[in-house]
Amino acid sequence: MFTTKTDVRSPTRLDYVACYCLYVLLLMGSIVTLLIWRVTILLMIATWIGLSPANGSIYVVSMLVIGLGLFMLVIAAEPYLSNGVKRGQLMHRFVRVALPVIIASMLGLLLTSWM
Image (tube, helix red, strand yellow):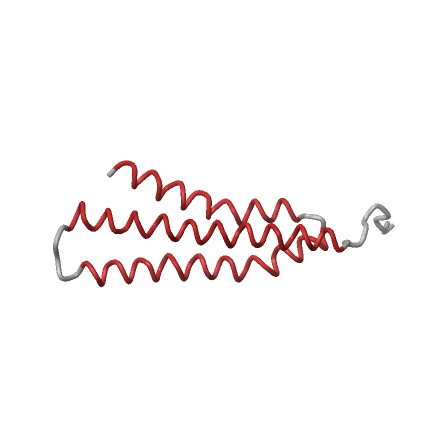
């Protein structure tokens, strides 16, 4: 009928240290992504709009949207990663969470180099 898994082990302290090291790496990647997009947005405004009274508002709104999105991702990632330790899926979950941050930063770099 039902069998229990005997190969599942309980997480150790080292597993949680790895989890929070990956979490700090994600946090640092999010900060770098925000800084990349700061420059990208300024270049986009200078290239496409030029001098306009709306530049400040466009910059602030776009930085708020990107900053809040990254903040929500980082806040949601902590319990997601720590539950991944318990299930033995830490690296799989880290890649799933870090991939949007990496794609966003690469897109920002691509747009910056294009302009």
